[in-house]
Length: 216
Length: 216
DNA sequence: TAAATAATAGGTATAAATACGTACTTAATA
DNA sequence: TATTAAGTACGTATTTATACCTATTATTTA
Image 1 (cartoon, each protein chain N blue to C red):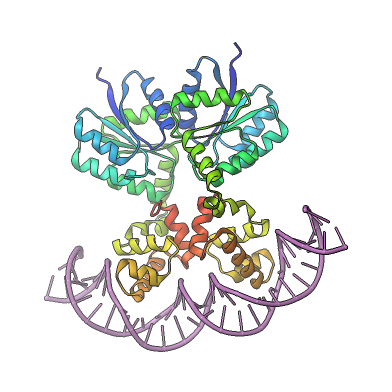
Image 2 (cartoon, protein in one colour; image 1 turned 180 degrees about the vertical axis):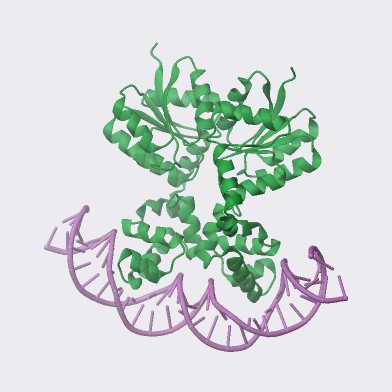
């Protein structure tokens, strides 16, 4: 039987090493390559045509997992991607699935289930670990519950720029200078951001931005 | 030769599994137990007297790595603790070392170096991975460089309480109600926090609080 | 014991953010 | 083509936060 060839993408070497040992212990899975960020992963895929499944972390320097997933699916549609991350927030899940991931598992998964996940995704099927599928199901059953977070991706490009500037701790007037618009426009963007996300002030905005990966 | 008995504390099962395989592959190290947070780690140590080295993550629910380290060193001074985390910020390093950790390594460490680290710490000696020792050295060479972060721990208890409330996005008047003090006192605390940390507004305060582990 | 710090709180003033309404232009879409 | 969303911007008013200053009490430290 042909082994499933995987590419591990995670910025922590010791985590890669550990997962490598776990997957290599499965008879029909092989860790063929690894990368510490999205850019390195893309470089590897450019030069090699032997990967079946990519295990992708989300939080990485250089190129994050969501964007990397999107690019990989565009360039190499046959490669299946399994998100392997510590983020259980719905916004991350939907971002990764929209980007083209087939599966989504958290890092508190057991070795056995991780092996299952890789096999399932390799067959082109979806795989979610329990807590992730619960999140998805509760969203389907109670969509109003998740409206607040759903609207995350509804932020426009300009609003995201403003949000990023706000987290730097600079005033509207300074933000206006950076973005080359009026400070009144910055105010309007801030108001719309708060409205869209159901937040009420700077403090909530920044907590939101950090938790949802708009900064760092 | 007697094996070094270790306790792994990390909230992600797959990470524990991986590190377990790495350490168990070393002839004189053995992963004797594991815990997913500080509380569970303490429970294990209460009932068992067989651990030489604790590998401790920092960010965990229930009881974080810094506090857990402090408690373990007080109760079981013979146990040596190695911090194993993704945080390279100086504030985390000094917090863990002050709490009583002997070593500090990042999760991008190689398997070989991790095994070295465990052996070194087991002998009661300090171990730092390269990037960590560089951070420490640059601090010694240029202390002014780190003044801003040094002052972290200078926040008083009350100031920390206020800081935590601020990150919730509630107003001074609401914070005052929660802490049962005047809103003018809250203002004073906020002003002192900003002054001590060299920050200038709510936005910077929240970014600071999140990055330095005061919340979540 | 003298000095410093923590925790408390008020006066007064300014700066910044938020609320709500309105409005124009352009591009995308039903 | 009519409508919607994005991006721009202003008027006015209110609420919050920040900037100074001062001050009392208790505790800690030099």
